[in-house]
Image (tube, rainbow, N blue to C red; front, side, top):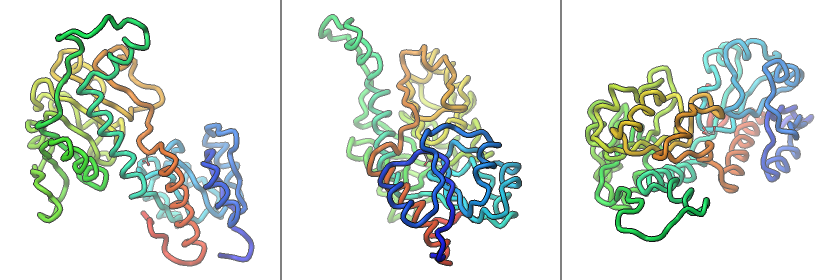
Length: 322
Ligand code: DGY
């Protein structure tokens, strides 16, 4: 590390263990109030900083990156997703960018399973009845959902998180189908059935769990035409990014029963969500909490710091994107 601690702008409030560690090595500018800064505020605060620790709530588009002070040499994002950062613009300006893969795999896969089970078993409707004191007692035809045992789970995007969901779903005796740009090595498939394209995967999905990155190619990829390829009464779960789903198409499919239920942890334009999702009884909605465990949120912060420390030691950061 340099003799004088590098100055580090931290854009959001962080877990206390992360703050304790980062203040030992950096001259940290913190955001204790956790207010969401405007682009101008961020740029103003970045003056004189060598590094920025941001999150997915800060849009680091080409204009923002171009306007960053020249002293900024590295951006460490406290997220595995990096669609909020224009990597080309960062590279052009000579700014290193890192993310936090691996450490949030299990927590996010747990939430995908939570959504699969909650959507299948009508958890929102049941919870609301009990909480509102409207439950009138056990009946054979009361809140009957769908079994997961023996069903086919389609995983769109079989990366680390997709594989972790597959491991969990096998424990529920689900059969795994998947699509991914490149087929997994046979030794890693563990019986999962590969489909080259999303079109080929969808007819085999009693459940679909989305785990691909948000890119221009995956924008609104789950649209009307793709939903029509799924079996009637299928269930859709998304813990990746809201932009992958065409909300209007999914909402219509949920209304018609083509899609029996959806479990969603991420939304386009979150925290504002399409209000129709709230009115539907067959949705189970979470506020982007895939990685929200104490263990994972600490690990994400430590990973950012491992990357920053490596950079300021003159080494290549382990999770360097550009
Ligand atoms: C991630 O790490 O990408 C989470 O979704 C939080 O942004």
